[in-house]
Image (cartoon, one colour):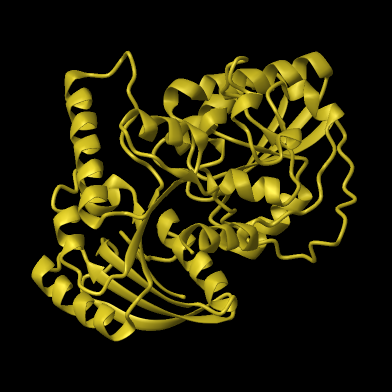
Length: 369
């Protein structure tokens, strides 16, 4: 099968959806398919890049358009590509902010509909629109409605044959807007670097724990919840916790670390700020830790590539932001490794390694066949 993936950006390690496309493209090629990747609004480059890139021991054709490029030029080049390649399917990888800085890609559907010889269309809705909440401002409510209108228009204009999304929560939100979708779960964004048949013999000692936090810090309103639960565990169990923080911690990173240090100042809680690490180093850190920490509430855990990666490594996952009525019902992948109460770590063992890329790629192919 011939497939083109369209996304916003393909800057390695800087765009989660772009990295997702690379990994799936490589797996699809290994399975005998022909794949090309196209970034339509890449903010990391100034000029168009047309290159053949080696990724996971596979050569992938990648075409990246700068966000500054005129749509007329994009369309001319893409139409030449599709005319020569003649794809069976074109896949739109959708996040509203990937195609418009304010999350309103109003002209995207019209643009995509002008692509000739695109084959059938599939859409993967990574994020549909901002979520409604009782604290939403009038501006946010208006933005949400515009984002819904944009998404409906895009799907209608490309006549999407198959619509996927990554979590049941988004399936429900899309269904409320009359959009029927199928579940295509995410795979981890950190490749397992050891033999998956190698058992991890690390024993968890509840009195001396090593945790790992990978990625952006939680929003400020949630930071004290993390820190307070760590303090209570250390105090009640006379325990010590070492927290490894790695990756890009985002705009709230500094305050998050300060919040933990302040609230946990009277217990044995040590923070090691490791910064950005390569994939192999992160995988090894997962193997040497007792549990990972998720910043998401349960309904969003499985849209996080880092959380899925921890679970693929067999690492127990602490989800401190939760409600009792939603905790287990929202978890589909390895719920036995997920826990809300930090004290439960004494009852949980590491799981076997369980990479999902191959399984999910084959489901993707089956759904569009």
